[in-house]
Amino acid sequence: MDAPAVLIVDDGELDEIEAILTDLGAAGERCSDGSLDPLPRPRALLVTSGPRAMEMPPLMGEAEPIWVCLYGPDFLPLREHLKDKGVHYLVSAELPRRGLALFLNQLLHGGSDERGVRRIPLSCALTLEVGFEKRAAQLIELSRESCVIATGEEIPDGPRLKVCLPAELTGDQNLELEGQWVRSERDERPGEVPQVHSVIRFPSLGADDMARIHDLLTGHAPGAQVTPLVAEPDTVSEDSRADWLSDDLPPDFQETAGWNQEHGERRRDPRVPYDRQVDALRWPGHAGLRTGLGHDLSRSGVRIIAAAPPPLGTSLTLALYGSKREEPVLVDAEVVRAGEGDVGLRFLRLDPGQRRGIDRLIEAAPQLEDLEADRSPLHIAEMIRD
Image (cartoon, rainbow, N blue to C red; front, side):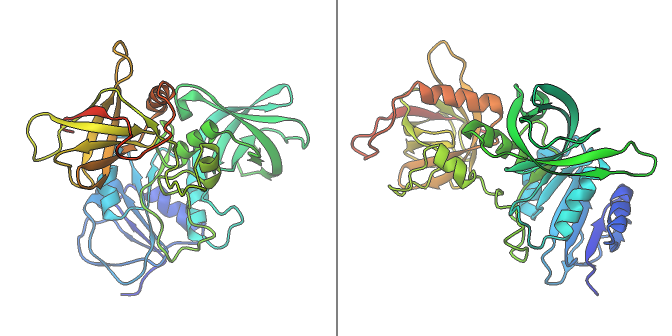
């Protein structure tokens, strides 16, 4: 079987995707009959519907395409299963055609890119401040260092710019980013109102701004419409692949957050002693509550001591306590290290409210100066099941 550049596997619901790819000059093969017969593995791009991604026919060949899965509103809870299957990007079926076309075109032509990072399509209304004037605009794409917006008129070069992303996209409060105009071009399509598409660069971002942009780019924020699941194939150019796909934030955030290069500290967040209660749901195969001793806490995770450590990869739900009158902060976590009684847990998919809750716990704790085993403060951790 000859390998096509693009393969679409669906049950007939991806007609618009096929039309977009045809417009991009990337028409390939399509399987929409529900067959589970073997198909040729595409050279560049595999696009599937959510249900077909869960029940894929065998793919034959040695190519390593980028796999994009289009999902409906009720399909996102299955993303961990799709990650295990090797899906690279989950894309909302509600993403407007313009943003979807830009993203697919970017994946198809992933050669050298001066940006060095993927631009993720995001569609939402926003406010653009030009000097002291406020204008309505539409967000089209976002990266960790810039965005593309659509406006009804040109943006002058010179005045102060501020891009204000709404709370429903980024969390419970607006995200205001100081910007710098880079370039603009008119987008005139038959039957549509002409627009001006402008690139706005973010010259200086604070640590919190970087973290919230990172949540959007990695699909963890409420308004994210594209969720990266696994790193792109090694065959993709290093200049164009998404280097923010790992759970670590960019190096500039690491420095802002206190990443300690001098002492070889590999964690992106500083740790503090945490001597308050931690309840964790019991891991599979162990009955009853388990008790452990904790070492330290950061925005990324917590370290505890447990007599019977859970296996690597075990998912738990943790309740992190502050004062006795405060409700606990509930977070999902995964076991990333399980030595002889030493258990490292990494937090998963923190929303803005959870991040603020953890920040409050960290602010209430003294800074950690020594992590030697015989001098580190300890705290109780009870394990409960996920």
